[in-house]
Each structure stands twice: as structure tokens, then as C-alpha cells.
Picture 1 (cartoon, rainbow, N blue to C red):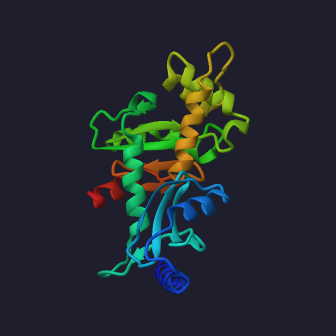
Picture 2: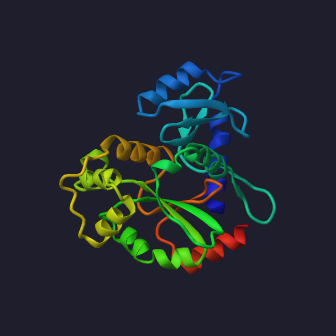
Length: 240
């Protein structure tokens, strides 16, 4: 992490030498990033002169004023005992905002004595997703409510895209999810919710999900990969 911070800072300083304009040329930045398949949502100044923070539909990149140079990575601020990941902090805020109002689209496994809520992008064909699901009672017993969003890892081309679309279209989605994770779900005759599943998938991509399970904490911070219930609870307690 220290190496990444030094490398990014050194590269950013080098970039400023190539920056000719006093303020960002938003048209040039938009044009050049669009050619790379990145559509800017917002363009704002970063803490480093000549380097702009560009929020795209696929995460955050840092771009020179003229759009000629860009960095895809995390920007750290060297302060205190440990550097602060500014990119992660910004993504957490964006992620939290994106999840607002989506509760009705989630498959929820509530904890009786709820202390924390964790949203999980899941894929029924993912081994670690199945492991997580098989331990659902342990998460609930630890006071952790689990909420699922769909993330078939290949998008609409996934072999299980239809299965996941049927899960979200079932009369009892939680029961359907239980069966799918056990390998016994029969999607025949169920009206599929493909548009909804694709919406979840695109949301995950925009939030930086690259694999499953991907856990999103209440503040929007992402934890990639499987986390056992005791470790997750301890980590949540430490954060709070």
C-alpha cells in the first residue's frame, strides 16, 4: 500500500509537467475517456494540482487537465501512522448513495437481533457464494442481516442468468435462493425478472464489483470475497 501511494504520487507529479491548461478541459477529458469505454459522470479537482478526479460508470480515474494522461488506481494521502485511501473513501460514499431506495429489490435474510446490515452481490454458480449462504444462520446469529443483489458474473451471457432472473421473479425469492444455492431450484414456469437482474449487475459493475461474493457495508465500503461470520462481526465491531 505504501508503495502504491508513492508510485501514484510520483506519477501524478510527473503528469503535472505535461499539463498545459490552468483548468480541466472537460470536453477533451470526456472525449478521450469515452474512446476507452469510460463515460464521465462528474469531473472535479483532486487534491493534486493538474490531476482531476473523474467518476465514471466503472469507477474513479484520475486525469490530467488536457485529458492526455490518466491513472486507474487508488489515491492515498500520507497522513498519520497509516495513509488514507481517498479513492476508497469516495467510492464508499458513492456506493452508499447508489443503494438507497433499493431495499425492495433485495432478497433479505434478517437477523433477529440486528446489529449490522451487509449487502452482498451474489452469484448462484459461485462456490464461495454458496459457502456464505450455507452459513447464513451464523451471520444472523452474529447480528448481521444479509441482503442479496444479483451479480451473475458474465452478465446476460452467464449460463445462470435465467436462473437468477427466475429467483427474483419467484413468489418466495428467499426460498428460491435457498434452493438455487443447494442446486435444487427449478426455474420452469416462473416469470423471469431479467431486467432487474441486469440492473443489479450493471450497478455492481459501476460500484467496482469484479467477483463474488462482494460485501457492501452500511457506509458503502466494499469487502471483496468471502468473510466468515465471526471475522466479519469482529471487523464490524472494530470499525464501529
